[in-house]
Image (tube, rainbow, N blue to C red; front, side, top):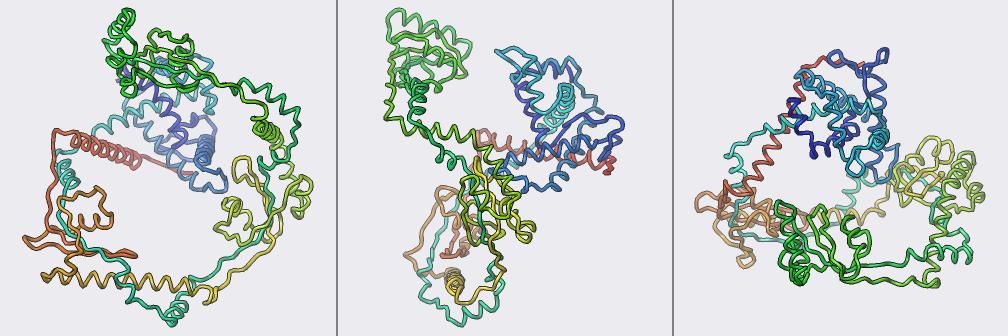
Amino acid sequence: MLQDIRDNAQSTIAKVIVGLVIISLSIWGMDAIIGGFSGEPEVATVNGQDITEREFLRTVQMETQQRLMAMDNPDPSLVDEDQVRSDVMEALITEAVLSQDAENQGLELTEADIDSLITQMPQFQVDGQFNSDRFVSTVRNMGMGVAEFRQNMRKNYVVSQIRAALAQTGVVPAQNVAQLLEIQNQTRDFRVLTLTRDAVADDVEVTEQQVQDYYQDNQEQFQEPEQVDAAYITLSLDALAANVEVSEEDVQQYYQEQAQSFAREERRAAHILVEAGDDAEQTISTIQQKLDEGESFETLAEEYSADPGSADQGGDLGYAGRGVYDPAFEEALFALEEGEISEPVETSFGIHLIKLEDVRRSDVPSFDELRDQLREELARNRAEERFAEVRSQLADAAYSAEDLAGPAEELGLEVQEIQGVTRERGAAPFDHQGLVRQLFSEDVLEAGYNTELIDVADNRSVVARVREYHEPRQLELAEVSDRIRRTLEAQAIRDALNERAEAIVTAVEAGEQPMAGDWQVYEGQGRTGGLDPLIAQKAFSMPRPDGDDASVGKVVAQNRAAVVQLEAVHEGEVDPDGQEFTQLRQILAQMEGQREYRAYQQYLRNTAEIERQ
């Protein structure tokens, strides 16, 4: 098998192996560090193999960072540390039994195998050649040493071979696929009568007594939660920038430095794309020969180009500046003179012949046109230099201050106020859970301290303190009577719709056809095709008609109801040789293979001797 590994350790594997290692490290924490150092305390033992405390803690740290990176606004207080530790422990145990199983099966990479894989990985190459400096720096950026990385490759690669082998063993009988397609492609004939709230609204009335009774029976629904009124200071990059003074001389100097960057050159290109293949070079040679003989580039593009978007326009791609095309294409295009045709240029799309049709350059805007924009850029650049410093000053000042007025005056910031912040959240910036949690903490709520300085967004930080605390209170009936009335009316509407729909179902089952002109007819209707999801779900879940007797049912939503009369069911067509059949069978086989791998993984865990410290 190892010879197969050597033979197959080509581009595809080389591209995914680093991904496998990184995924294992960041999601499962697999082999985050080499264990087994003598004398290290362990957190668990799997079949006599220790999971060291150092390995466990480092993996917990990596997993915590991964979860923070997944947040829109990273907030360490939102990470459940106990859950992270539990997940990491289970992942390390699973990693251990899988690695041991691979070793027991005699699967192992030699040092030469690892060298071969590493040297072929594009992540470690410069200009297509392995670069040891790139390799070392990349591995260190992953938080690992070279020896650790090689050990991770040794373990993860062979484990992945077992995973892939088992995942590919899933087999699904053709009969099962056919049955699913028959159901999926099934069509039905049915009729639908839709009732809206207007049909029953006149029959619905909610009395004052009903409102009062509902209030008395459900007072727990009408309690206002505890709230705080708060004062806060916001430090933002935008606010700093607004207060930065930029002289006219500074703006003029900045204009001179940046002027050329505002000039833009765009080139109008045309190309002939030939798809890579055995006959590509011959095709390119033929096109070049015809160009030499005087045939027009546009005519040849229409005849030969494999680019459907430009071939009909003679290969014309329009105007574009730098940063639009593939780097090789761009380099060739911007090296051409107007009217010149390039030599063959190879990109991931195929092989191109490029013609430069025209060049246009925009003039540099005048200073007056750019003055405001440049002033804002300069102010923001200077504010960025100050932001970290001011943030640190605000954090220190607020920590020791008895209020926010002093820090605000010291740093030229404004104290703002907000009312009605609950433990759930409030208006921005108190829609940040970390800030709200601090506001309701014992130190802030009861001891009267300021919160810590919380980063609620990029370049935006907030410190707050409680101005006034409001106990939870029972809302009065007058405050909630309108809400109760709407709730009772909605329930009454729904009940009335249900009652009306039930009466129509009974009438149809008795052979009648109430509201005959209002029924909508569907013949050969599939599960999709713009059908109302409420009606589709009902129509395709009803039992098949019994002989000539249609099935009748109803479905009731908040403001409407529908009666469905199902008349016929037509089995879906299945083509065992068709693409739909093949794709579904592949998907089901993959799912089955994954299920078998999970079962195998669980078997290894169930039969392992696991001791947690």
